[in-house]
Image (cartoon, rainbow over all chains, first blue to last red; front, side, top):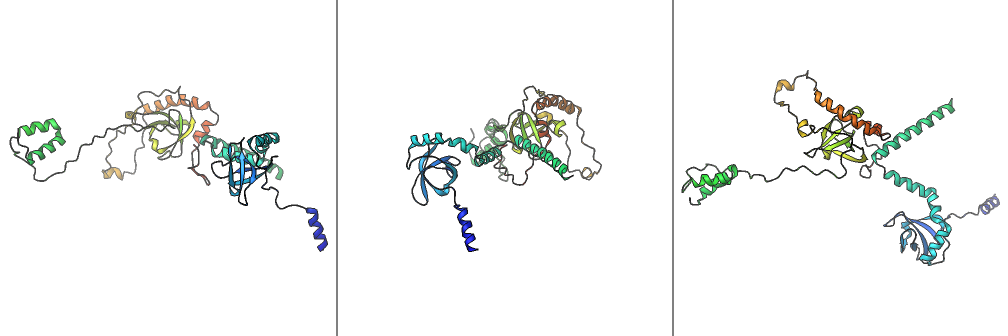
Length: 146
Length: 205
């Protein structure tokens, strides 16, 4: 029995974490003046902070604590301490901005933003649309139940 | 000229306040050396206000054609169209009547949320006769009359024919303007309310 469990563990071979703080990791800043912007980790300072830079996204090269960033799945091929030119090249080569925009994370953030900025009239139209959708769904459900 | 004794000064001051400086000077001049009369008690005469009555500024978000949410009164929560700003600073507003039951009425901008929705009211002509005097409450009902107070069978308020006619003429053009935008009529017939998770300070109107 013990042997079976060990074999199972070997087959799994999965790490607990998938996104690492490393040079080239694209991260989303979620606190401070650059809230909501993407940047690349360019160097690691210590266990609490790192150096980031985002020339294409308008983030100045700066040291930022990990508490203020969220790691994404995206990675960029750059060397440690890469300057703006190299970063730009790698960023556009990897098509990072498009990859990010198409991700469900980015879409969710955009949806939240749009919802917040709706006018009273727009909110009314959304309410009517949701009611219509619900009516259609309920109708189909009734058909299935019958 | 009479000596400026304290009594003369007091009299002159009260005369200035009640009648004006010219009248006061005349009376003082004719008073002689000492005033022949001065009041027994020193009565405080309030100072005349120099405040000029000016209509308040209209919020930048409110203009002719903006849809606005009424916050108080019988029609609270109703979404309504602003037709124009009257001379007194109050907003002239109409439901339109057929859409949500709000007639031509005056509304204070303080009791209103301005939305960003605008209706094109360039084709809507509001007759010049509709101004502050048109809405002025002329009935002089004294609430002190006990009989009236306990009168159970009150006569219903009658809407004058001029009001009905004006409402019809203004709303005809207004309804046409509203029908241009899809869903706007339904929007105006629905009332505004806050529900759970609504944060009015974070909502854009």
